[in-house]
Amino acid sequence: MPDYSRLVKAYDIRGEVPSQLNTGIAADLGALFIRLTGADRIVIARDMRATSPALAEAFIEGATGAGADVVDAGLGSTDYLYFASGSLDLPGAMITASHNPAQYNGIKLCRAGAAPIGEDTGLALVRTWLETGDVPEPAAARGSVSRQDLLPQYTAHLNSLVDLRGIRRLKVVADAANGMAGHTVPAVFANLPIDLVPMYFDLDGTFPHHEANPLEPKNLVDLQAEVRRTGADIGLAFDGDADRCFFVDETGRAVPPSAIVGLVAARELAKDPGSAIVHNVITSAAAVEIIREHGGTPVRSRVGHSFMKALMAEHNAAFGGEHSGHYYFREFWRADTGMLTALHVLAALGEADRPLSRLVADYSRYTASGEINSEVADVPATLDRVEAAYLGRDGATLDRLDGLTVGLGGGRWFNLRPSNTEPLLRLNVEAPDQQAMEALRDEVLALLR
Image (cartoon, rainbow, N blue to C red; front, side):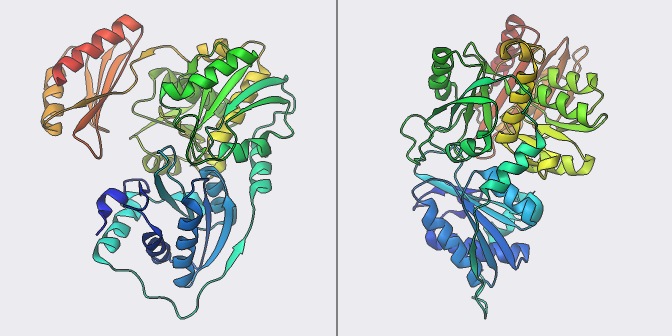
């Protein structure tokens, strides 16, 4: 029997095909999705992986067997599925394993209006139903399937949210990593003042050039070289399902996602003064300062899209951003979209009379360590030990919103978060300069190891 505890995760369903996820399980999940949402109509899309068509058909078979009609929106990015769910006001299912290697696949689920479904909002229930074999019997009347390509509507909606018609012409290198950006970027950029240099736009779920995970520096190397070779103004790196976008400046240097949080927050606050902006506990302190400087209200969140989206709904936030390259927009149903983020950054660059390196310098004030993983024997005990080491230290602030965050004044802080799946603690450190960051990093690592 499959280990459903490893397949149904905190935010989505993901596993190796066929050992953990196969067409039989996908059909069961289609039926269970109809039970969970109570929907009589849903929308589905899929990525370019070799196993995605069969898994999508199986999911559709399960959903129609449960009596629901299905809108099959075909190939698309995950934010394309969120657009479909939001614009049609239907629950949605996206067949994708995001940035994972070729042997993986999965399903991201949402309620109508692209509202997230996570551990606490349905996935735990789905896992229990799978484990107990509690799958609905087929309905008396099978639902129907209609096929609808929504790419033109998706493109028009995004272009209506950010106006690039008046910007200076930009040379843009985009690395799709053989993922879904190769399908969506040409459509969205078609009529913009952009000279597009495409990289790896052929849809290929074997990822022949590099992994579709731009959070890993090694996967940016080709893009960085091409930006320098072509003299481009900017480089864009999308992950496999194109819901995340990372940025490279004209020198080939990667732009920290926290700087993008600050830049886009400033743009959103110019449109909607005084709005709330959500950021997670690992986002740079610079982003929080920038939100306040532009008249916004920073709202701190745990890491993860379900927490971010819930706080955005609670505070009617205009925008939300995470250190991992996920960016959420109120005017996009509070869903994360790499493409809309790219349009904002291109607009900001095209309106400026300076290169991207100088533009983002305004939003990068501190030095970050990046995430450092440490395997520990006892995660709770280790967190308690680190907390005790800083408790009572002069000027220190401590909280447990998400793991342990310790602020030490003078722009120095760190966060330690447990992994959901492994005996690991993930350390992120920030300080005013490299020397101070390394000193604090080594101090905390000595406590851990």
